Amino acid sequence: MIALRIAAWRAWAPSLTDEAAWQAWAREPWAPADQGEQPDCAFLPPMQRRRLSRMARMALETAWPLCDDDEQLPLVFASRHGETQRTYALLGDVADGQPLSPTSFGLSVHNAIAGQWSILRGQRGEASAIAGEADTFEHAMLEAATLLDGGASAVLVVLAEERPPAAYDDWIDDVPFSYAVALRIGPADVQDSTPNGTAWTLQLDRNTDDAPAAWPHALSFLRALYARAPLTHAWKRRRWIWQPMP
Image (cartoon, rainbow, N blue to C red; front, side, top):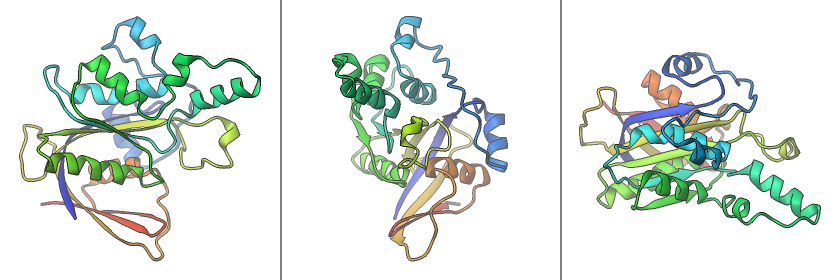
């Protein structure tokens, strides 16, 4: 079992761009229509914004406010499927016998967004990129706990998924809409100045008969944060148990 503190968090999805919208979603979840909207990323110059993919903008939009300008924080970037829109376009070029764009290919790798964060934010510390199964969120939190145990005062965890091209519908069924969630994680036993910070334990048990979660794990966890209620996520033989600490 591990314990950690959620000092602050941010999330973005189409039509879910502020606190009130996410509170409403947490009370009664729904899948918002996705018309390809992109986060503003107003903290970046226009030229830099134009070079970012939609998924990169989603990740930066949520993570940027959680890190102070003069702060160096480890980053854990997590995504089960990664840049599916970009990789699908690259596969189309291969099928058509077209040359691949070196830039597009370089930005399709799984740690590209972590690298863009490091460059644009001036971060020189550790950065990890994780791809798991439906419980990628929990694996990212384990990675963050490891960094905290190694001496980090705080860790940024960013999980992002983009609705994939229709060609993937038979294989990718766990991204109901595009979303990104960023959390600032700290040691559970260290209080911070954030009034709404909450401490949680995470325990892994063997799963026997629990069904998979109805919503992506990161989004279900946001509902638990609002309710300060226990939460169980099951995937294959793994059962992840979240408990709020007093």
